[in-house]
Length: 260
Image (cartoon, rainbow, N blue to C red; front, side):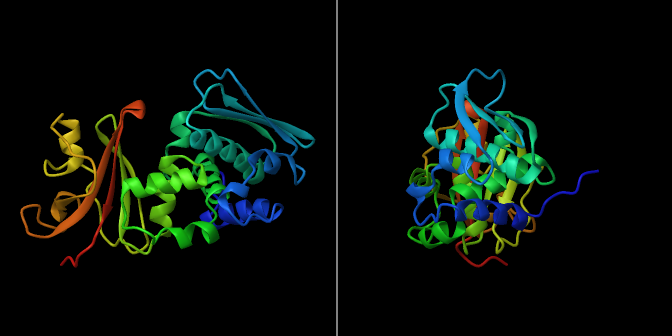
C-alpha cells in the first residue's frame, strides 16, 4: 500500500521548482524552462496520444513530456504539462499516462491528485494568487479571469480559488448527471448533499433542460446543504455552468448571509 503525500508536500515541491526561476509574476512561469532545469531535462513535444491528454517517460538522465496534439485552450495544455512535471518531482522516474479524467478528478489518495495539486501550485503559487482573489465577489466569471491571468485550466483555477479564499465557498462537480466530487474552503462548515439532486438547484434546471440564465443566483440553502430546510427562507449563492465537452455540470456555491 503506497503512502500518500500530504498537500503541503506537493505544494512545497512545486515552490522548490519555481525557486529556480525567481518567479515574481504569472507570465514568468516558463514551463519549458522548468521542465528542463534542476536535473529534470524533460523535453516537451506534441503528438498523437490515444485516449490521453499527456504522457511522461523519464529516467535519471532526462525524458519526454508528450502532450496531445492540438490541445486547446492554452490553459489546459499548460496544466497538463505542469501535471507531468509534478509526476517527475513527486513520484520519480518512470512512465505516466494521464487521461482527461485523471486531470479533472480531485478526489484524494492517488498519484493523480498529488500531481494536480503540484500543478496548481506551480501555475498559481499562493503568494501570487492570494492577493488577487479579493478583487471581486465569487463567481465563475471571476474564476475565468483568474484562469486567463495565470494561463491555467478553468477547473484548476476554481479549485485554487476555493482552497485559497477566506469566503465560505464550495465547488461541486456533477458528471453524466450524477454527483462526482466537491472541494470546500476551510471556512465552509456545511455538508453538501451528495445523493439526490434537489429540484430547486440550478444544476437540476440545467439537467432537466429548463431555460437557464448564467451567473450567480440565490438558491434555497436546504437545496444544497444538509440540516437546512429547502422550503425555508435561508439562501446561498449558486453559480452553475454546463460543460458539454466534458459531460459535466459544475456549481460554485458560497454563503453570504448567516445560516442557522
